[in-house]
Image 1 (cartoon, rainbow, N blue to C red):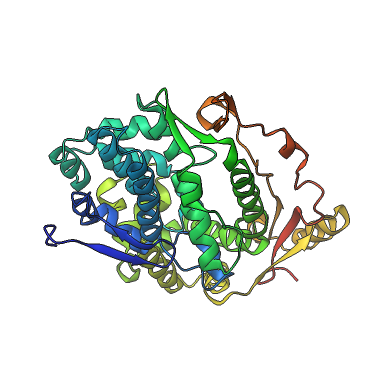
Image 2 (image 1 turned 60 degrees about the vertical axis):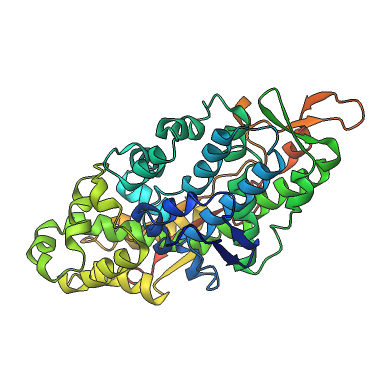
Length: 404
C-alpha cells in the first residue's frame, strides 16, 4: 500500500473514513491481527436471525476509528500528537482479540478476548507491536487505556464508558445492517458540544437529550436484538457441539486427518483457557464453520443433529417457561436413558442489562453551558426500566432432534 497517497475507505455509516492526517494508521491495517477481523462477524450468530447483519468487526473497528478521529480533530488544539496517536490506535485495535462468533467462542474456549487483545499488542514478535514502536507509541499505554488506568483520563473514557466511540459506532452500524432505527444519534452535534476539562471529557447540558436517547436506544437494542431468543438457540448449539466433541475424544482423534482445520482447533477443544497466540490470529468465523461442518465424518447422531441445527436453522425450539412445562420436559428427558440431559434442554433466564453502568470510569460528565458548572449525568430516571416484567424473559430451549 502506498501510504504517500491520500487514502480513504467508503463506508455506509460514516460515508467516508480518511487517513489524510494519520497515514501511519494504514500500517496497522496491514497487520495480520487486524486483517483477521474481516472474518469475524460483528454480531456473532445474529446473522442467523437477521440475515443482513453480516457485517464484520473490521468494519466496526474502522468506524470506531472514524468517530475517534472526529473527536481528535475537534480537540486538535488541546491535545498533543502523542495523545492523538494513542487515542486513534486504541480505537482501531479495541476488538482485535475477539474469536470466532465472539462472545459465544469466549464462553466455549474460556479465553477472554480482552486478555487476547492485550497479548497481541504486547507481543514483541507481533506485527502490531512493531508498528506501534515504529511510530513512537508505547504498547503498554494502550493497555492502560483499555484498563481505564491511562494518565490521559479522557482517552480511557472515550474508549470505554457509558458513552464512548465504540458504542457510538456499533449502535449506528448495527442499526444500519439490522434495518432498525435504534442507533439514531447526531454524532457531530455531540462532538461539537464536548469539552476537555482537567484531563477529562465533558458534554454540554444542551446535549443531554441526545445522550439520554442514546442510552435508551442501546438498552432496547440489547433487549430486542442482542438478546433475541433465537440467538440463545444458536449459541447453545455451538456450545453443545464442542461439549459433544469432548465426549467423543477418541473418535475425534481417529478422524483428525479428515477434519478441516484440525491443526487450528483440535487442541482448543480439550485444553480450555490455553491460548496459543500464533494459532489464534488465524481464527475466523469462516474456518471455524468449516471445522464444525467437517465433524460430520465422526458419524455421531447427536453431534450431526447439532451441526444440522446450526447449519440448517432447525431442530431446537424455545418455549416460554412455566413450572408445568419444565416438569413435562424433565419427565420426557428421564425416558431417554442413554443421553445426557445437557443435550436435551436448557433453561434460559435472560440477564437484565443496565441502561447506565455505575462506577467512576463510566461516569458521563456534564457542563452547564451558561454557568460552566460541572456535574455528573443524572441517571435516576432510568432506574424504573426493567426487563423483569417481560413474560418471555425466562424460557426453555428444547432439542427436538432428540426429544419430542
